[in-house]
Image (cartoon, rainbow, N blue to C red):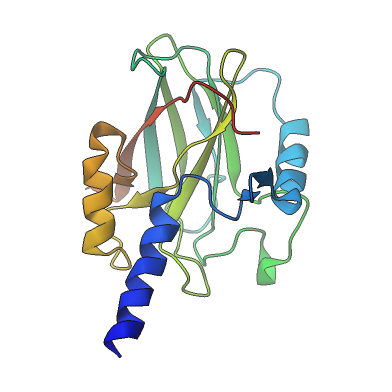
Length: 205
């Protein structure tokens, strides 16, 4: 029984600390299924992208969540003009809608572009954990820039999620301000998280 618990902890930690998991890449290659979703999303990318945008529509069922983000260059200076794509599961833990039927792209997603201070913002709802119980609620971010290409950022998890373990909290804490477990604050029924992402020198895909 102890061995089983140990492997469960290891499994959860792996899902958290790997910036781009098997959902994105397989042995160094982009998962073709994920890439199909991405390409469809990229085709629908708006021409004009604001610094503040939406992921979930105003009438989407769920707890309102505002994501305040900041992108940094590899040298930790604020990164202006970085395109940020974000998506997450809905309030029931599904990526693609009813019964998790895979559409050509994710149902809840949005685009933003960092301002001169590297800031961006998304209004959305709080995602639910995976409906199969495989991992806690989290939010995906992908960045696009001419200099650093297309990059996956670490998945951002929510600090008050009971599915997270002490090891996961510790691993995130060691990353300092770029930790991937974001503290949740709530004001008048609206939850807020802050996300800080540091770009790598080279693109991922």
